[in-house]
Length: 430
Image (cartoon, rainbow, N blue to C red; front, side, top):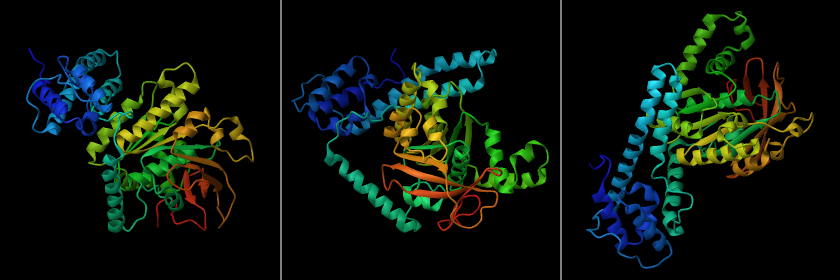
């Protein structure tokens, strides 16, 4: 009995069309793979693609009527392959549900299994990095992107095309957060998590979905930091029962109105990049968004999921996977990272070379941001301390610039130092 997700007519029609028109190998074949075909037709597909890429005449391997619309045939093949992929995962999901019902598997593990299954199916049809595409075929897309950016600038009046962090000088230097892998590292006590958490809230306030994956702090702790920042009180007071719950309740209402697209998840040893991709795709669909901000706090803690023997191998593998994730989600991925001991030395300004297991990090990242002790330059800071955010690498623009900040550890707040400050106490533009 044929599988419900088989489409032999589409497969035969596409292969016959490919034999007549080798140019399809560049336009449609990249979204297909041999595994998407059935009944041995995958071997024919591989042979035809290999010969076409070598600019050799194609043999007739598939008899039949060529598809009148090869694009529709390719889409049908892809849809059937996605259906088989999900169908093949149902048995694994069913077993996980049975184990959960019996108390042997946490329900979060079941959800992770489902997210991985969805992500696996979604990845079908994504052209691989090794696909050969002639340069002329890419020109139209590049010009179209430039046109879309020009139209967006004219419509919004903003010169920032990426997601706004809420810090004016940083946005000007980076063009906001654009798709790619961004690293944020810093010396102890410089507020890496606080800054990332604040950026997450500022991006969510614009309506863009944000996924914050935390390996150190709980969801409740990260949200509490926002309420304390807004109320201007210490988190310690809340934990000691000395904070006014009415004030926190008012702050919770205000924050909730701006954080509808902000999601936190607690990373575990079983949190894979595939699972994160599944959650990212889910958020994009839920909020009808063409992008999402993913924050990983932090990279070295996540590296253990890669499965290699050494930390360096694990970090390298996770770095590559997060970079791929940014491309697949069309999203900026901000990963917090540790510095090695040389980067902790008092009075020393850290560089990319101080990233722990730095080789893969400094080469794999599109942007590297480094936090270190800064110098006061402006009005009195009260209980704040000067912190310097250095752009050590910026693949898409200026590198080497500094963004002077004021960090208030007691209330978990950042702002830009004068004379560049154009933000309020919560990092948002005035």
